[in-house]
Image (tube, rainbow, N blue to C red):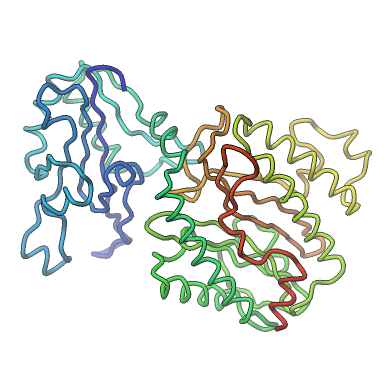
Length: 409
């Protein structure tokens, strides 16, 4: 942070559905990362250069009461907030304007927490947005800076405690995979598979799915964000399943493809193994110093070779391809990797080199609508200082023969 500057982080809103119903509360990942506070109507202020030490790190919380405890459950008090966050100076939210004014009188600049994620949809006004708007109206003479670049940098490199939480999320995901491999057979419905997964996740203390699961059989496997999960699975089809358990607010993100009848056809297995070879080669490229743009270019070359082998493209297609949309994109149209952590698509720089401790998915795929066949394989990886990444999903079955063996055990 620049000298004489403070940073402000707000919790998320509780979003209404209609009437008096609301969506479940999900905390803003930045205030959660910095403080551990998973509670609505909370504000964190960081002011390292404050003259008075009590203003250097301050947490504002909604004052709890016996009535709130009865109707909503216990909320943080000052002692429990200190124990959770390590922040000594906790004020009640009704004192925010008075205390914050004292801090702003000393500060020259303010770091505001705008959503800078490249894929973010920012149409909905958040609690943070309203706060920023009010703040700039009240204090127009201050310099305003973005906290996002700092947060993206520090959040993208995982601490060991974060890796441990992600590993637990992946371990619970593994239990879900083992459950459904015994369950899937011709005639089951996609939503029944989803139900088996949520059962296994919740009974193992997961928060549930880290994101809306994709359970797509047959042609639906070629729809990248298919989430209806409402079709019956037929013998001879392959099911593409993209799901992951969440644990302690940390995400896992897995994709596996299995034959409904327990056996891949020869063609299905050829495509499956081609995708697996691309994944195996691609994840080895996730090493410190690599730029993501260069990484995706190299993965494209690996995929191009596999598509030639499958006779899905030929050398003429490559010769005549548009450099901005290479021939392989007809069958592999999405990126291979994204950051993962507190968000499934976590924050991190796409223009700086990869660092040790960063967490990425690796998820190549081949989609052939004409054959009602879509194959994607995905694991979660931690970049190491030396050598290949640590695969947090290393114990989850992925080899085609192994999957067939488990389904027919």
